[in-house]
Image 1 (tube, rainbow, N blue to C red):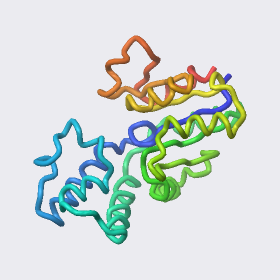
Image 2: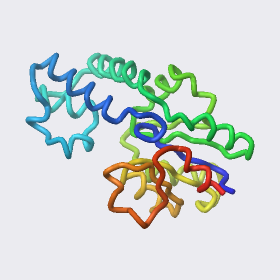
Image 3: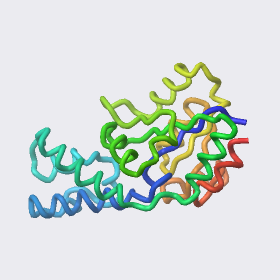
Amino acid sequence: MKKILILDFDGTIIDSNFVKRDTIIKYINNKYDKNILNNVDSFSIDKYSRYELVSIAKNNLISNKEKNEIDDLVNKNVSESKLDPYLFNLFKFCSKNKIKIFIVSNTPDQSLKEIIKKLQINHYFDKVIGKRNLINKEKIFKEIIKDEMISPKEILSVGDHIDDYFASIKNMIQFHGIINHSLLILKGKVTFSKSLKGVIKSLH
């Protein structure tokens, strides 16, 4: 039995990947009368942060005031997105078996914590770690292993993006994928499920 479960946020426990993208595209269109897809193709857009996309559109750095404005809008829309219906069952299983649950996401740290609080699921998680100071998931996973004084074999990582997979294998952590187009190249190499329902088997 694993001792720690690391969950990605967007596209893993909540159906919010396209919500975030559409929110930023509409924000840019409304505020700057520009279509960001004329500057960044749809296949590359996920490589940029929300702040980088707005900076590209306005051809200038964005202010802290504008960052807060963007965060508030994204937080509102994501908070209205659909949670995975099996999240509560997974939480109950982990509680019963004393498995810690961590959220590790590329969503800005403060925004992530605000969204989880609005969704009233903050008590599900032992730690919530969002993006801060450009520290990537690979380094965060490494820090978790060190801070928790645990073997990578006792951790399961769950995500819907190829970066989640690489952060996991580079730390020798078992990876469980939530089906997404970016993970199709891993078919046959890792365990997949359509929802969190399939994660419990991987925790044994």
